[in-house]
Each structure stands twice: as C-alpha cells, then as structure tokens.
Amino acid sequence: MIENHLSPVKVFLRLLPFGLTFFVFGGGIIYAFLQINKLEKDLNILTIEFASTTNSFSVNSNKLSENYTNLSKQTKGISNTLNDAQQNINAVKTQVGGVEQTVGSISGTVGDLQKLSKVDTQLLKKYSKVYFMNENYTPAHLTVVPEEYLYSATRQEQFLSESWPYLQNLLNSAKSSGVTIYIKSGYRSFAEQKSLKSSYSVMYGAGTANAFSADQGYSEHQLGTTLDFITTGLNGNLTGFDKTDSYQWLVDNAFRFGFVLSYPKGNQYYVYEPWHWRYVGVKLATYLHDNNLNFYDMDQREIDKYLINMFD
Ligand SMILES: [Zn+2]
Image (cartoon, rainbow, N blue to C red):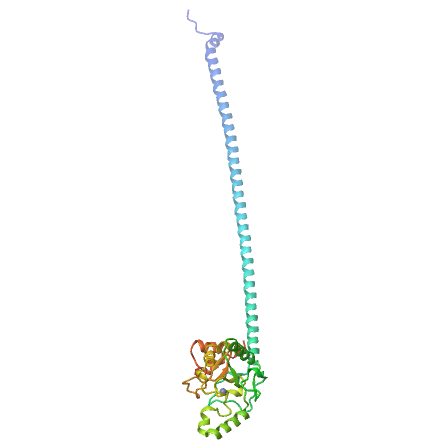
C-alpha cells in the first residue's frame, strides 16, 4: 500500500540531517562572518592608531623642525647683532682715530707756525745788489765770542746767539782734528760795514773796493750768522786761505755744523771768497753739500722751506 501521507515525525526525521547540516554550516558562516568583522574592526583600530601615531610623529617632527629653524634664526640674529656691534665699535674707533689725527695735525701745524714765527726770515735770504737788507736791521741776540776762538783779540767779535753753539762745535771739532781755524770777523753792523767800505775805497780806489767788500746794506755779515775764517801762516791775510788744510777741512766738514761757502769759485753773484762762510742750518747745508749746489743758485722759495728746521 502506498502511503499518501507521511507522518510529521517522519518528515521531521527526514529533514533533520539537512536541518542540522544547515544549522551547523550556517552557524559556522555566521561565526566566521562575525570573526571577520571583528578582525576588520581591530584592523581599523590598528590602522587608526598607526595613522594617529604617524600623524603625531609628523607633527612633532614639524615642531622640531620649526624650533630648529627658529633657533637658527635667533642664532643668526645674535650673530648679526654681534657683527653690527663690532662694526659700530670699529666705526667709533675710526672716528676717534680720525679725531686724534686731526688734533695731532692741528697741534703739529700750530707748533710749526709757532716755531716759524720765532725764526727770523732774513736769516735765509739771498742778498745781492737787487735784494738787500734794511740798514736798521740788527740780529735779535748776539753772543760775544770767547777770545780763544779769535785770531786777534784787538777787536771784540759777536755772532748770532742761536748759531753760536754750531760755530763753537765746528771750531772745537777742527781743533781736535789737528786743524787750526780762527775767527777773523763775525757780525758787522751797517755802520761798521759802511766805514770798512770807505777805508777800502781810500786804500784801493772805489772800483777795487766794490769787488771785495760788499756795499753796506747787502753784506751777509750784518746778519750775525756769517763770518770770515783765517788760519796761521798767512800773516793775518785772507788771501791764500783756499790753499790751506783749514780751508779743505771746512769744505769737507762745515756742512755738518750748518755752514756753507757763500761765494765759491766761479759763482755769478760775488767775488770768490773762500774764507767767508754763512750759517744756514745743518739740513740745508747738508742738502747743498750732498747735491753739490751753491746757496745762491737755489730758488728763494726752495730755501725758505728750510727756515723752520734752521736750528734743529
Ligand atoms: Zn766776509
């Protein structure tokens, strides 16, 4: 007999394996799904955490970089400030140096002017028949020459006080070298020169007198810095002085004491006077000696530059 109706129990029993299978399988799927879901969440969390860590690391790194930049800027700023300060110090130093130099050069100029104002400008003038000194001119200070330096004590001789130490050194130096040099005549006033000229004129006639005794008014003897030397063996005469050892010693050494021969042989200004020497200062005398020049051949403006050093 065909059974048309299956009993519910049978149906249940028949379906049970499927149901169980389905239940177990489905539960597994659900479980697996849940596990996957959980893993996914964990992964998300991890990802977020990693991102946040990375981010904060990046932020910290940026901050560090900013701090470093700021520090670097500040260091630079300090360095610039130091440089500026150093520059300011240098500028101040330069200014102070400049002021010191200016003060120095002003005081130097004032010193030079004071020194120059005390030097008699007549002392380095070239005298000739064109330029001559005032008949009233007298040297500011005259020193009486000690007798031991004079050839003859019959007349007192005087010399410009500032130049006298140089002349005295010259005479002492010559003496210690074994050379005999005396003073024949030193300072002569305008009046003395005038009477000397008259006596020469009477003795030799006016023409001859003009040739060897300067007209009063342009004799260098009126300055007090000029003298005639003489030595023994010439019977008191000046003629022949240039043949003596004394003259040669003067040619070689007088410049060291500031003296020059005013009228050397062949000069175009006056007759040759080997005995007639003039004090012009050591600097100018040395310049003339070293360059083989004559005082009267120099330009007056060039000569005047030596005025300030005349008594150095
Ligand atoms: Zn003379």
